[in-house]
Length: 272
Image 1 (cartoon, rainbow, N blue to C red):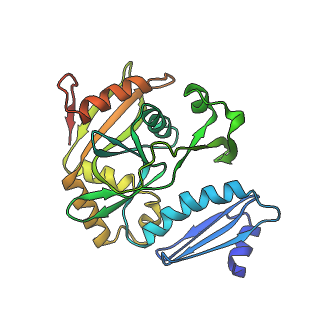
Image 2 (cartoon, rainbow, N blue to C red):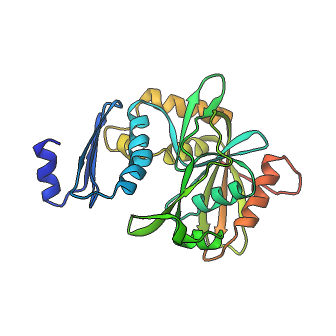
């Protein structure tokens, strides 16, 4: 690791980035330097936590590599419903990992946990990730897991657990058909709207993994923007608003299944 980065870490800086290079530091683990989409350098701390080391390699590092390679990767978990690939995205704490896990427990095929890498050919395809998920302690309890049997790690001041997800894991790319954005709101029940038009494109870009690297390094490149437009042409985008402080995963799943199986008893408003 170069001396400039080490000096910044000594001054309590934890990350910096431009269009070609990103570095970030994780206490008790190490410093990760990702360059040009093809080089990763890791400077380990003394006695590093190797479990967390791997989590960041398969999450943030992979996402940044894809961004540097100009590959669109959505921040969210991916599931196959009715032979259609769906990605569940949203801000931190929205419940996307909980929802993805509940769908996997119900028997749906699992594609990826946190980074949905999109390949553009005739139609957008979601590439498979890795056969594990990361869940917070609250979600572990609500979904019936005994946390003492799983590996814990600290992420953003919260304890999370690594949960293997190999039984339903898909090893081949799947057609990308729908993107669901999960958010909490002041509502009494789970609500869904379909987002269309320019708003749809903006929301796709907003939910790209580590899109802030582009935004704060001169803006989203033109060819990357065109890829997002191409994705928008081929997929449906739905915003699901769930009540705050309520566990409504089953209700969310009912709505999602109605949409993906094209049942007629779901009312979807249109926004855009």
